[in-house]
Image 1 (cartoon, rainbow, N blue to C red):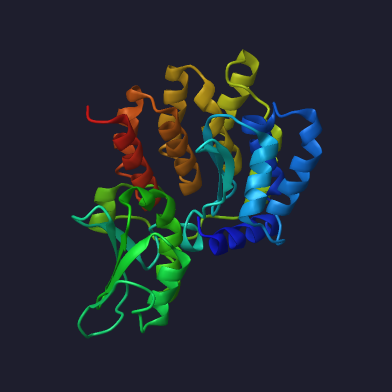
Image 2 (tube, helix red, strand yellow):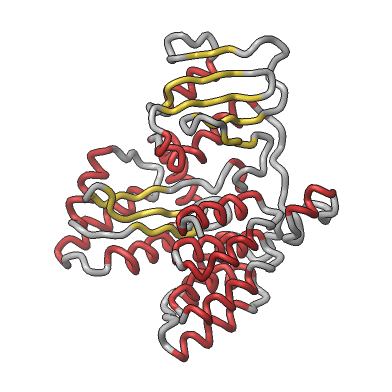
Length: 340
């Protein structure tokens, strides 16, 4: 993730008071077994990571050295806008803070990514940019457009940029980098080439067919009456220690699936992953019909991470969700399961 993008995310996560939520995930999944003597230095580095203070590649390496070797990669929602990803890549511990998307909803803004026949290139459909011929740029040095130069300078992986009347096509040197760069690229393209306000979430999930027929309810922003990020943090404090393998804990998790509190249902969607396959499948099936986009996203996210072939039918059902991110994530999960 580009340093400038991650720095913005670090500051925003700290300002929203999400650091305790992030540290809880880190401790539970990856840091619980590190040497006691390393705890102090690790805590100091984490405190600085989740702040407005500078953070460099040397700091990444210092943290990796203290944490030591390991395996696994985890992804957790911090709130509607940010996720925390962490684990070991190429033998070194790393942390990332990918934004959900511009303004909080991936693919729901004025710019929409589209696949092209070339796997290295994604076409970002934009509001009208100009009414002349398309312009091709192979490097920042060739770009006489400051917006294009920013695309090159913020992402070293960019090989070329094509600016059309109503689209920006970006090609990478390596197609496998798109999954890591798509969200950040979408933010930059939207900032530079579009100024239209981001659409809000439908009140109910609906289906893709209803969306195309115009039958979806009138869009509105998801209610923040339950406190947004603060509510999610509180839900993790209340439920985060529960383990679905314990019968008493499982009862509480399943009760949380039906809670009237959005954040509680969102946390339950993640925790139920450790329950027996049939129990988890039943809970996720219910949560896929949840009126909250955030809850449906959490359910699909958990199902994709579970990587269970028997979840294919639920992931296919999620392809009809009105939320573009939910459909995209479900498709990614189906791809990971492979051809049936």
